[in-house]
Image 1 (cartoon, helix red, strand yellow):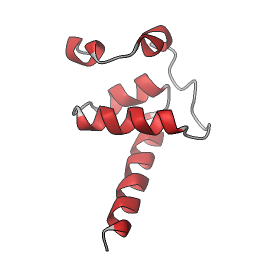
Image 2 (cartoon, helix red, strand yellow):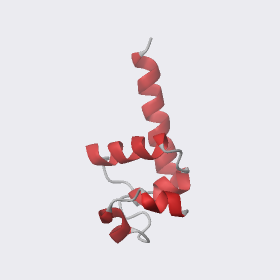
Image 3 (cartoon, one colour):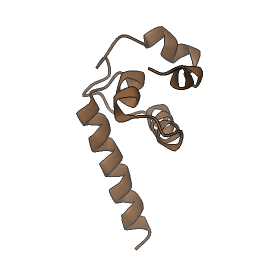
Length: 76
């Protein structure tokens, strides 16, 4: 994780850092989605986001694709 990425971590994430996939398979909370969108807006990598959210990279990629599909469907 870069220093820039670490600077944006809330304290709760710093405490959880290093516990990968703790949330894998669990439903996404509204806070998870806020954190995901914020991380994407900051240009964070999928690997960083996955570690930050304690989920697998595949799960994060799937959720990003789902959000993009929903966004695209809403604009049609």
